Image (tube, rainbow, N blue to C red):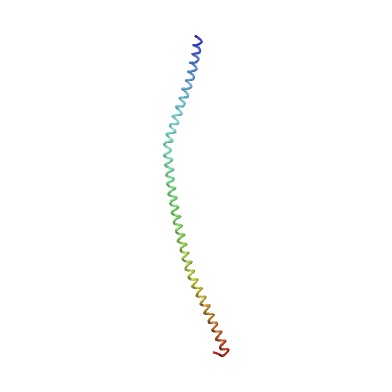
Length: 130
């Protein structure tokens, strides 16, 4: 019986040591859980702030993009206006050039006719027909 008592006391001592280790582990786990809860609470506060700043940055980016597209549209419209002005100028130049070509042809025809009449007059005078 004495042996049983010694064995029981040894077991009890081992159980007490194991329980002490378990209590220590549970205390550490509780401390870790408190730390994680604090971190989680801080995270929950930081997330809306960060998302708010991201939303603000996106809104500003959207405004900047809209502004840039607006200036691009204005530039495109200015280019269209310039192209239209160039087209109008080219059409006017084309009309003027055609008029000048027609006038030059008429002048050349008039010059040739005058030359031919002068030559005919000289020939006729030389032949004494005129």
